[in-house]
Image (cartoon, rainbow, N blue to C red; front, side, top):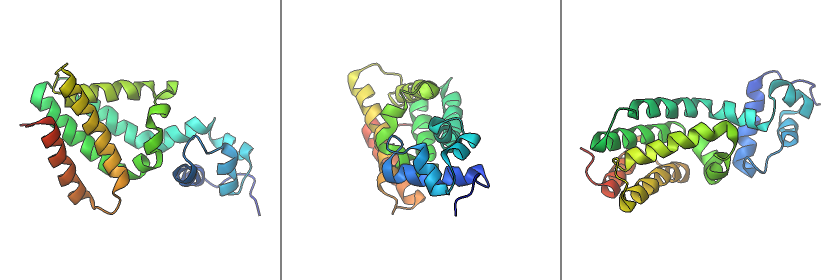
Length: 181
């Protein structure tokens, strides 16, 4: 039997996370989420203004950690910036493996939403830090590959425990970017 209002926002968030994992953010409707929770679309809208608000809340802890990393990188330059960026992004990606896996293929499109514009700016600064401040094509391309590769690996290898994946990610990043110390 359907309830009129979900008991908690957490039910909606859990249903949305599961649905995003199956059909993606773009392929999920508020009606899908409501059906999974066992309530009306209006009940979902009582708790969240729209689907983007649900995504924003699901991603809030990861975004907070990205903003903290961005703040830490503000004064860093060269190899220090590279090292801090690699280590910080690896930790972020490991901690939020589930969220990355949920949205892995949709990141570029999601970053086009006005609500997430600041994330693109953080991502650009992170890429620049990974490039060690170099404006050369090789450094910039390498930084982008490392950034995307870390996220992809965290989504692709759920069978690896955090310690094993961390070691592999740091080793590969060091090879790709050169010495970080």
